[in-house]
Image 1 (tube, rainbow, N blue to C red):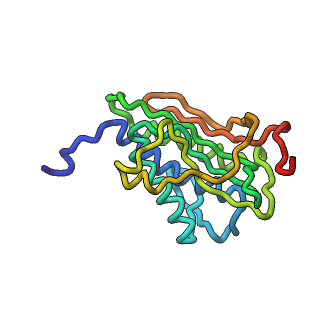
Image 2 (cartoon, rainbow, N blue to C red; image 1 turned 90 degrees about the vertical axis):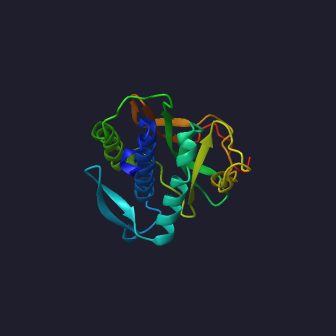
Image 3 (spheres, rainbow, N blue to C red; image 1 turned 30 degrees about the vertical axis):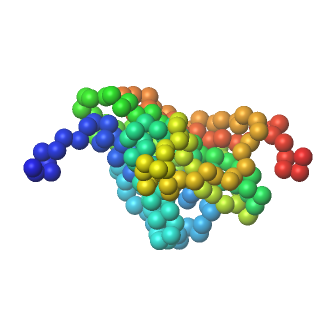
Length: 207
């Protein structure tokens, strides 16, 4: 059978585009926060928008392999949120960029890729000018990509699941302050991008 004869379910195409988008968007977040010198990135075009692509092999591989590893879990509807978390030297979170996503697994209608890309491009454009909404990071800041699963995948049934381990970053005790950046609500994909910062009533590490 010719590979062109194999029909990919609409949600399968959506998930593939979504994962590619997340890789570009997360790279944009890291560039935006100035964690690395600007020379660690290069300008590229994606979805007809100017974006940043990581040039450093280890940085590029971390983002690509982490996000690509989410693909089978997003396809199964297990992933609720993907976050880029920045934390200080005490492993205390100082800022989170959160992508909250929902893919309608039962959606069967054809989705025009151009329509989806137009909607996702708006996220990249909005993200590129969102720095005023963010906080200045401490000099010893680190970061990681964290996925929040609706149900934890079984490590005994999937090699992909074995690559995901619990984060040791300290969690906030109080509900965070949320700042919306961009959202879309359509079929078969709903996506929200927002910032989270610790509440003013959040206990300090020394308390």
